[in-house]
Structure formats: C-alpha cells, structure tokens
Amino acid sequence: MTPAQQLAGFVALQRLLDRRGRLRREREDPPPELAAIRQRNTSQMRAMDLARKRQEELTGEQRSLQRELEALREEQEHFRKQKTMVTNMKQLTAVVSALDHVQVQIKAKEDRLLVIWQEMEGLEQELQTLQAEDPDEQAERQLVEEAWQQRQQQLDQELGEVDLEFRAMQRRLGEEMMEQFKKLWSSRKPHAVVPLDGTACSYCHAELRPSLVQQIRSGEEMQHCDSCRRLLFDPEQHPVSA
Image (tube, rainbow, N blue to C red):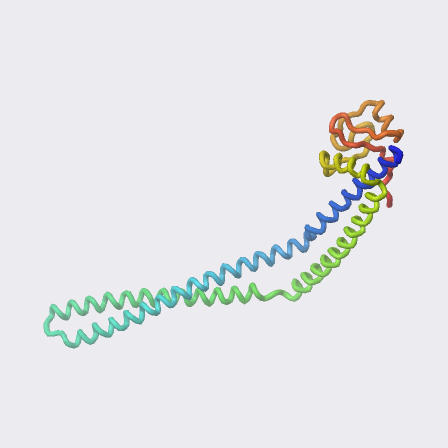
C-alpha cells in the first residue's frame, strides 16, 4: 500500500469517526421543541409531586387536629357537667375559667381545620388542572414524539452503516496500518487527521512551512503539523463525497 493510499484510508477513517460522533450526539440529544415539551412535563410533574406532598402533610395535620378536638370536646362536656354541680362561687369561677380556656382551644383548632379544608380544596383543583392536558398540546406532543422516534430509527440505521463502512476500511488497511492509525488517534482524538486550511493547520491554525505545504499537496508522503503533530491532508485531493 502506497503512502497516498494509506493517507486516503486514514482520511476515510477520520471522517467515519467524525460522522459517527455527530450521529451519536444527535441520537442522545432530542430536538429543542421536544426538549421544551419534556421540560414543561417535568415542571408539571414536579408541581404535582409538591401538591401531593402538601396534601399528605395537611391530611396528617387534619387527623391530629380532629383527635385533639375530640378530646377537647369531651373535656368541654366534662366541665359543663361540673358547672351544674358546683356549690359555691369559688368553684363556679374555676370551672367557668377552665371551660372558657377549653372553648378558646376548640375555636383555634376549628379555625385551623377550616383553613386546612380550604387549602386542600385548592390543591385538589390545582392537581386537576395540572393533570388535564390541552388537546392541542397533546396532539403537538404526540407528533413531536413520533417524529423523534422516527429520526432515532434513522440515526440507528445510519450508525449501523457507519460501523459497516468502518469495519470494511479496517480490513482494507490491514492490521499494521490500523495499529498506526489507532496510535495516532489515541494521542490526538477526536481529530487526529485534519485538512489544510490554505497554508495553515485547520486544527491549531499554525502557519506551516512552505516546503511542508508542498509535500502535503503532493500527497507522496504522510506529513504532520509541526505544532500539534496531527496528520495533515490536502482537502482538494480528498474531497468529501456527496
């Protein structure tokens, strides 16, 4: 295999790896419109979780208050009975004071229960609103999701084609040449083979020696950038296939 053929093989490998990287990145990142829809859904789910958590807290407080109210009402009834059995003013004053204190506590807890009921009603309405999906939004979401699923299938197919091309190129180059490429790739990835940019390296933008530029354009030997040590090629000799 001539140096020119080896360079052509390395250029092809680099382009296949570049293409595979682009396809994988696209495969992993949904389109902006789908990401925005999913973000809205995530925000809705978070709001629903918070509302349900608050409901649980209020339900626990409500049950606790109801038990306390039951005890206070029993105590209230007890003092009312005592009030009918007092024999002097001192006893009456004490019972009335205790009864007033219990009634104040009952009123405070009943007021708090009312606030809880009102908040729980509002939370229930909020949950119903969050769970309800606008028909137009639902249709839009389904269309975008289906389009993304189709694009993912296309990307999977293209990735499979790239892998087949890469393995075919590996066989064409042979083990020795592939070892050379792997060594270069491991030290300079993800861009180990780069084109000229006029008379400069397109990766590090270092201006190249005129003699080096000439050697690269001749394509007779493989040449590296003096600065970043990446393998260089003339893009006019190795155009991107349509």
